[in-house]
Image 1 (cartoon, helix red, strand yellow):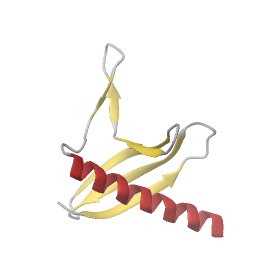
Image 2 (cartoon, one colour):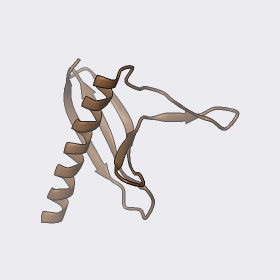
Image 3 (cartoon, helix red, strand yellow):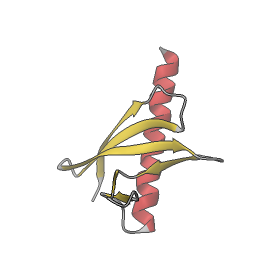
Length: 90
């Protein structure tokens, strides 16, 4: 499965969430609402989730192995940096 498109939308807020990404796989499957969050020492991605009746959040879609998580994270972060650079140039 290959990532064929990544779209990043910057979030204009003072909170920890910096952007939201949509990732398309094999030009045929998309995952929306992957959040780019500012952690204590670096940015990280948070997969789309929903709140359960007991108040806990559960991922709706997520990678099931470390290799795919790293590939996804690196690709999203690279696109995020690209979008930031484009925005700064405007």
